[in-house]
Image 1 (cartoon, helix red, strand yellow):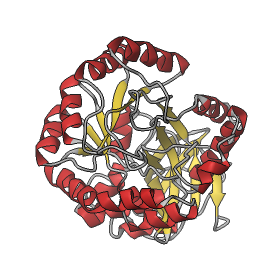
Image 2 (cartoon, one colour):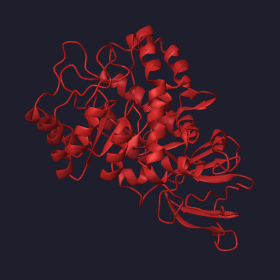
Image 3 (tube, one colour):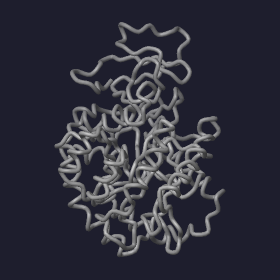
Image 4 (cartoon, helix red, strand yellow):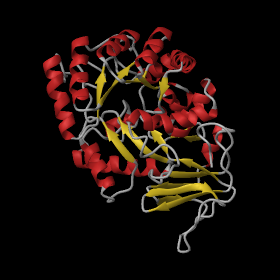
Length: 394
């Protein structure tokens, strides 16, 4: 079993599960296995916690042919598509996701169905519909956005009432914005403060889509807790993020070579491909800088966790790229387990293989702390004590 803290792994490990929780963890000599227990013999395999992906849009629609095909999609059809993507995410080894904003409240219906055991899927922490100003990222031509502190306050309360446990702000443009500089700032300081005030009063956090240093610095002043993408963020910004204890969700896969396969598959227009390519190098530098500065980093891909990406799936490729950018394999694996649980405030429930926590477990062929590419060998997925995938028939 992997050791996510330090030192040697636990050999001949036994993980005892009752219901959806882990009741004991230790070596074979230390854990007494009940006579009537169902045994999964994982000899020769490595046990790791389920992966946690902090940037997943289950209803993702990007510019291109795939989006055009879905332009008349009803709310019911969208919810069904989200449910299918939730199932595929779980089967790929991602047992917890954060959904940082969708253009529909269907995510809450999917979450409720998963919690009731009606459909398979990961644990979901959702932000509802993002708060974007008129003309901001994610808005369509002619659409009226969220403008002014009073409007932000009202929309923020609507999302929390719908079930959001995060709020999402669109404070800069993005790759999918057809026009406008990604490095520019779109929301005012007063608007951001209004969202933070409402979320923090309710005990929840605020994250911001941002590629802009200026917007991020203002958001930090407003008290925003987390930042997505960060294409153009620099050392000054990351140092202030670290001092503030803020979080960074890099989504590095969306600007690197592996994403181009995905974009072509969905028929992305040339302007979109060009825009994605234009931020690749600076985004990579931002990730390296964040790692060097010791910023809190939580794994998030902004692609479906199961989406093929350079010979593996997006969740795994995102983690591998963190190692390429300077993390140790242990740090990279923690970014998708221990650190993500800490960011969500659910470290007592998930993130490690520990007594009392949910039995969200993966089996691999080899040790990912020695070589992070071992994550490519996921062969068994358990969520809450239920095996949902077992390639080896163990």
